[in-house]
Length: 135
Image 1 (cartoon, rainbow, N blue to C red):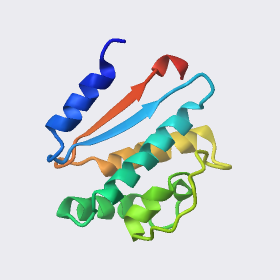
Image 2 (cartoon, helix red, strand yellow):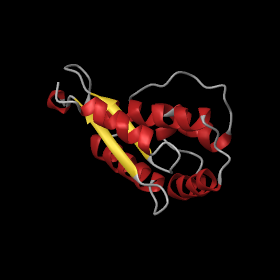
Image 3 (cartoon, rainbow, N blue to C red):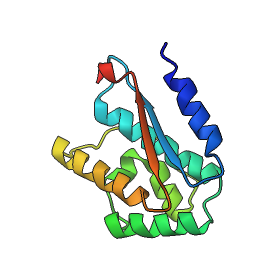
């Protein structure tokens, strides 16, 4: 009711042609905090794929992601659009917003590395998590 979504939509429309990435997630009473961020990141990569990922910015991001994670990574199971973004294969399974047998501190570390690899001087990132009181 405070106009947060409207503000985020205004930012998105204002910077649509710029290299601004917005990671959007929404908590609810039953969602695990890591699953909300994982789903938001998967949606981000799905949007990037849909918008075309052939720009120099996308190429440099792919390099940073490969440098951070290589080709084998536990994140790919939870964030399948990340793998599609890196490899271009559009035949993926539906995401599983869990990290399997990974420990919570491993998940946090991997998500921090992922967000760090996405950002650069050319690509600022806004992380918008709605209804955080449910986390």
